Length: 238
Image (tube, rainbow, N blue to C red; front, side):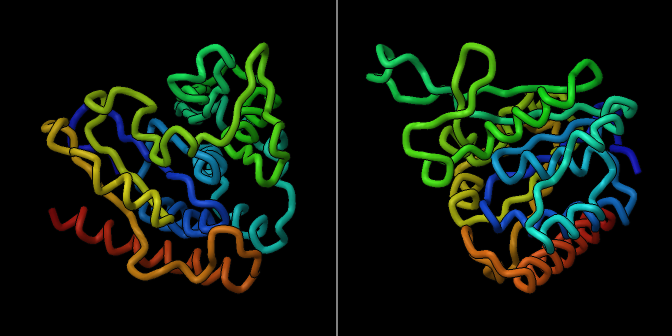
């Protein structure tokens, strides 16, 4: 299913910690409905979801959440290089100390299509999910000469990945309360020629932000699937 015009379709996954299990259901519902995207963008937990979806491996993600295993993205990234898609990962670059008067972090978007290595993609996802409370208070993920931390520090929504007027449709899944607060402040009226579809929890997610529970992961994914189906139904009736 393609957009109603010649402009491509963008899918965004916000941050969310372990609530990111919600995005498993979102991905599966969109794949089952045959809704295809040219661009995928993600922040933190959403970066992993975006990459998994872009590679056509949404069903694999459920097993990863079940086992809390390390997702070996390097085994599957060739699928992205051979498809006509792009993946955008939002990260927060740690600015030089002399610039901290205007904030510690600077937003950056790392984009990938065909010309990237497995390690470049994996490192970008790690950087987008790099939390000091988990990885060490004074640590950061290094890429080249710069250091990066969780992309959510500079914005929980990856709607800044590209100029949104490039797209005929923008779909955005948001799993966390903080992400929903940012979404409420987003002004769709700035893009009169772009249609927006937001997928959000219809009730509190069964799993919390830092809660590890296999059964709650599955229940959260099921909620994401059901919520996405409702948005798809409205989309088809429009």
